[in-house]
Image 1 (tube, one colour):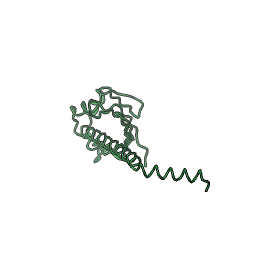
Image 2 (cartoon, one colour; image 1 turned 60 degrees about the vertical axis):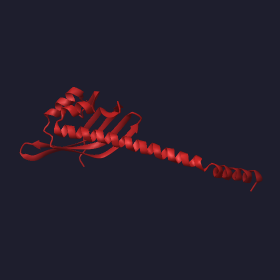
Image 3 (cartoon, rainbow, N blue to C red; image 1 turned 180 degrees about the horizontal axis):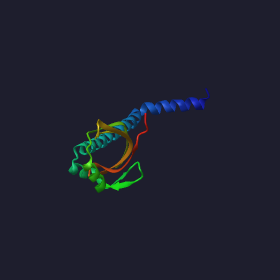
Image 4 (cartoon, one colour; image 1 turned 90 degrees about the horizontal axis):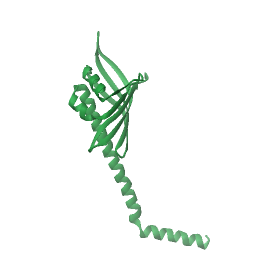
Length: 160
């Protein structure tokens, strides 16, 4: 081995041995950042679960608290509605249950994006229930320490 390569290798080993905490801090900081992001994602999921409960229970006060004042719903048919129209629509529903599946959450600061599938069960004429499924993308913002839904795009789920 040439002398300069050998000297460089010894210097690198000596530096690593002298500064073991440097690598540990970097790993610990990354783990902490992952834990914070995971905790924030859980908060977003809790807000979304509360939104689902509010829809099933037709809880107007909860819907007003969970939807941001600038909330916009982009329907799969190409129309959009704001917060007031969205709440009025939910209050007219006869939703029996709603199940969220295939959910993933991306958090970036005070903004979160949720991708998932919503499975709805409504009463139907002449049948036990009417079922539908939609793929959705929801955008949440953190305001005053709470996650609120800012936008939702819902479209029919492709048959499986």
